Figure 1: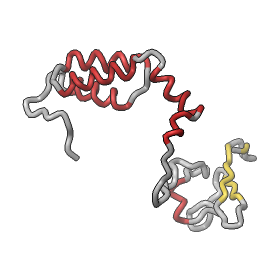
Figure 2: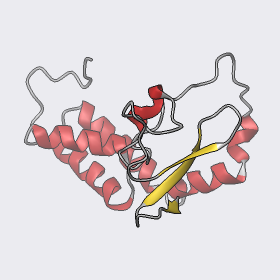
Figure 3: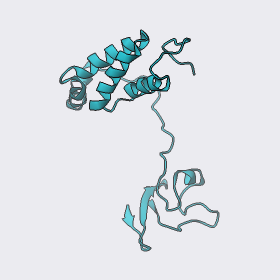
Figure 4: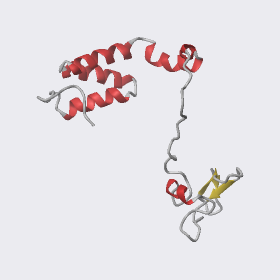
Length: 149
């Protein structure tokens, strides 16, 4: 990001095949309404100042991916796992909460998921707790333990 002459910010994004960046500041639009130097298909990813508002679609590699059990021993993986494993609270609480959830013991499940969320940012725990709260802590009569898309 760079300071634009009008006091706003501008961003330099490499869009051309030559690798040159196109800098966009406030009001840097072309006659066609798009931003100068930006392919039309990318206009929807930039706001009026040329700042990306969402990421372009993710393109995943195709074909097989090599798996190596040694990956779990990598320093970065150890650091990530340590957050959840150093005292055993996370996995034990989540397993207990999940078992209670499926067994329709939602009072205990709520306690487990709340304990996790006090210490960790965990999407699955948040999902199960939200479901419990949306049903006032009482599993519906037709509760199966899973949802259908």
